[in-house]
Image (cartoon, rainbow, N blue to C red; front, side, top):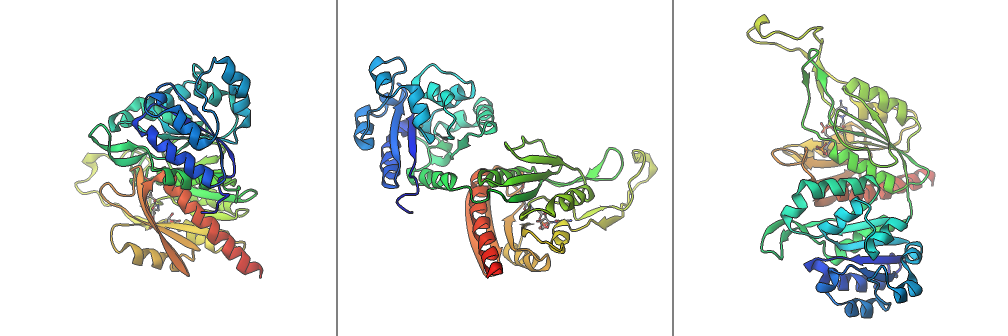
Length: 406
Ligand code: PMT
């Protein structure tokens, strides 16, 4: 990694968690990569690691107290809030996450976050039950809706002797994600259209043919494209997810409606990412009234193919850079590569689907193929996986444009 990749003024918030010892390594790595780091600790954090350690590593006084005349005169919380290009809280305890979600300002770190307009990233660290608790998840949801970046957590052995999700990411993994987020906005001025979620194909006014897509992958891709600075249009099938901040969302239900909205949006787009699980077939006719069980013993439905949206986009006169997805239960790579060619895509992201895989879950893994190469993006939560995918898309998008213009 280049030694100036984190050349930013970073306030590192350290909160009360056994993982606070990892913040020492984090400071060292941040400084090696060009960051100017000021540490703010909560009182609970001081129970786990001494301010002196972090002061020595950062080369700057550590701030703890909100109402301390000496500290306020040196670099008060408002000054610190203005100074920071970024605020990173690692480890972020469940308590700190809750207090941020509720806009509390009863200690230095929370006041600083409230007073700052700089981007904020939190790396949670807590017991797996605390992480899974509905209250914690709701607090994180609130923070993410406000544009806070959530890094991790990792999964594995915990200090409490349990196993599961909630471990602080390793310092280097935090650094890699921060470097990604701090990258210049590579898609500024570009339009990205993304399809997400399932489609529902009606049988009668109460029934439909659908699939298990939750929209999580596509919404995460929309968020990652927005983070990269793009103007993002998200054409969403019927899902109950919050629209990522700054993204324009168009709701549809059927494959035909998705086709219509994609074609209307994509003409002026630079990139089209087809992550929707579009139904391949729909009932030939839709009954006007609810089909009664007494009408027949065996109900026969005649199904006809839906329009292939991504293939139609590839036929446009001004074709955007097209990324398809392939959801397969078997022969994942072979089927994906075939779709790459038959659908005339620039890139395809293949995922294995099935029991607990791909659809609806929070984590996923992708094998990405393009005409001259491939890359595996290992299992990660969909938010991070989408960022990794976006990094790859940006690379290939500019590589294609540079060969076209030479
Ligand atoms: O939504 P989640 O629960 O998070 O799950 C994510 C996911 C598994 C749905 C996602 O990662 C994924 O794989 N999406 C694509 C699913 C799919 O429909 O794959 P496919 O192999 O059937 O289709 C190949 C490509 O053609 C896809 O880009 C699809 O959007 C596109 N297609 C398919 C049919 C059709 N009529 N029009 C299309 O454009």
